[in-house]
Length: 276
Picture 1 (cartoon, rainbow, N blue to C red):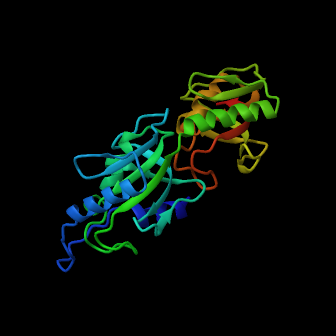
Picture 2: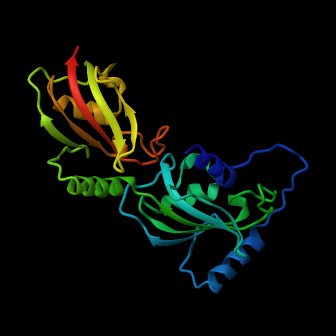
Picture 3: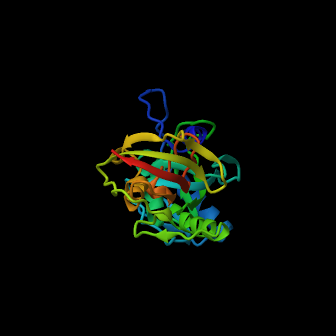
């Protein structure tokens, strides 16, 4: 994940400098002509905004609305109008907060929802201006093919497939958490403010284990854990055991954590040993 973020910084993050030797040439007119010619040559159904940005919507997307403060996960490919590729995301996509990237992305992505796809055609004044930047020539028009990842929809499909493939008798909560009650237990139910001792194994849907306690369990305050545990563990009584199947929105989100990828569904086999 760290490599994805670093690559994104190189391609999308705005470079700020106060060096007086840098050029301030205005490429707006020639960029406008270049974009218009590209749109016509490629028969694109593009819309122009007042800023000079052009965008193409292939799919608006059925997921969450994107705002100026949204965390975004996106597959992208960036190139200039001559077809030269200067950057693209890997198979897991790139993750960033919309407020941190170039103006063309900040404006353009808000025309889409999560799950949307299309193209942004960005003039230099909404990208890197008149200065060369990491191999991108000053004054360049930048084109990005984008596909915004809808983790919520993907997670739900992944969870349902996993449940079916493993023949689990799983129940859903309104939050999007699924759980399997193997034994309810006979003691008290914890609350979000409880201190609990739990033996657990955490893994991904492909079976890869990312965390595991000893048989004696680990002790912690439930309020300090991910939302999926705060919601799921109080469904069990002391002595209970089962499985928590947690979408990324209730776990490690778009950024992931250590060996947990961006947007990953996580599962925990849990035994609630004690409500302290």
